[in-house]
Amino acid sequence: MRVVIQRVSEASVKVDVMITGAIQRGLLVLMGVEDADTIDDIEWISSKIVNLRIFDDTQGVMNLSVKDIDGEILLVSQFTLHAATKKGNRPSYIKASKPDIAIPMYEKLILQLKNDLGKEIPTGIFGADMKVQLLNDGPVTIVIDSKNKE
Image 1 (spheres, rainbow, N blue to C red):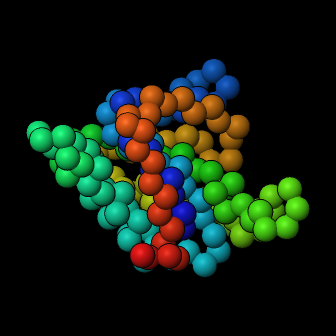
Image 2: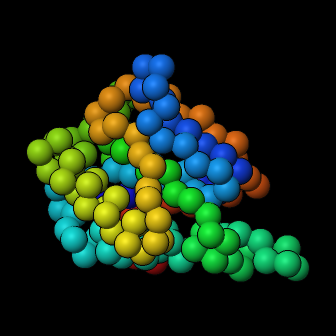
């Protein structure tokens, strides 16, 4: 499982003209699933997201997590995070899971984040053409891959 985490002052996702999820201060998380992902990947990624210390403390040092600041998380599915670009100029998405595998994993991550953060997790709509709007805070952008636990 691969996620791109962006610290935001606000973020929202829209499908057609309807806003399906919106947050104020917190994290916008774009997530992609591959077939090898398991519940262990979900638990590990969720813990990392919720406990990642990328918010400033009173001394201006990134020492607080989204949980510490009582922030929010907006989760958006994005299969293109598993794009392979080694050959040619047209990305291959062969590593990205098909919906029959990815949707249950996405739903499990929503529940895990909800449990770990202790609040509802606004989302986009899996597989929809989504428009994501954000006000990056920093900017701070972190990429985490559960298959590369550095």
